[in-house]
Length: 442
Image 1 (cartoon, one colour):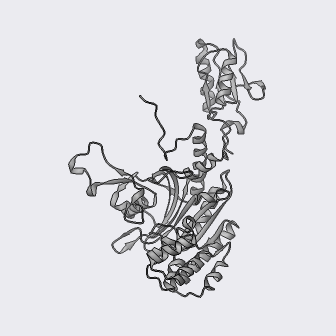
Image 2: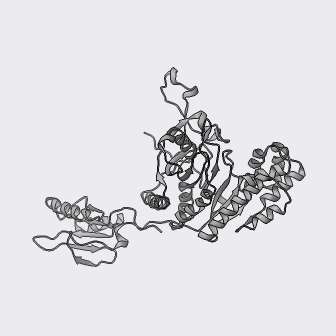
Image 3: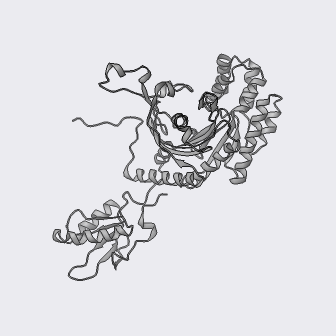
């Protein structure tokens, strides 16, 4: 067998990095549950036509095909693709299970997703997302849009990472403004403005002319709107100062003011109204969110989402929702690359029980079982080598304590191999200090 080579875009963390990832996921999960979100997991695949029906995502979808598929199920309507986000499968789940759900339905979902985009630092083809969504039947109160940043702010603040800033906008502001200046294809204008950070104002102006039919004056007005940013509700005055009037614009301003004011009361400085934020997917209809990790702004958003009204419907019944997603793998990849996250040891083991001789291994196993029953992560030495070698084995593994079973009636002893301190101990009472019981992340 030839030596395997890594596949670009499919990260495989070291055990230490995986422990950090699990710590991060546990913290995020705990915050989601504090806010009343229930766990959900959906299948990894969806019908291809469903994955492609909203937004410009066709180039991102991995298509599933059996190597020896029979002719009858070879493609067409039966084609499946790996989901590229968790919103589309969640929408399908709501539609299929609406009769069993209690609305408004609050769920969180932590799963892998797949996108066939070009891998680069912080961007992967296989990665973990942590989503929350609130969905209701027919109408969804606007105050749910103001709640999203609070949950995400608390979740990310619980982690040993740099502070974040959540940039918020409202698609109604943009669409209402574009209509107010006479543009007939506001969605095309939104997609153009969403590329501002990538291609700059001059190229966006050209794109507005090409795809949205904007005149030079209209393109200038669109760019003026996108330049507005404020840490408080003063953004509303800046929008109105542009002299454009439209009912949808007024509605969007009112909703965004509520989001910014609610966030400021809960966590001052968390949210910034930034009217260049548009989000490229077509299904967003209200508030949209992007999140910058301070010091890593050049890599783009690590958490994003928005309000959607038309993604889920069955006949005359619709299920509007709002959601936001943390790109967990993206976040960790950036911090691992910068050496900003570490774990105190690479294994969960706190204690290694030494083995005096192979004939005495049963006695060592009993000690390990007693410690495990009391919640102390413990393993038994793989060999009955000299104690010095067993201690070195623990050092290589990063295990802080070595337990020595007493011989011929002598009491057991446990040694902190970092300080050299060795004390008499009983497996039914002794516990390592809280900081050593489990690996710590920092």
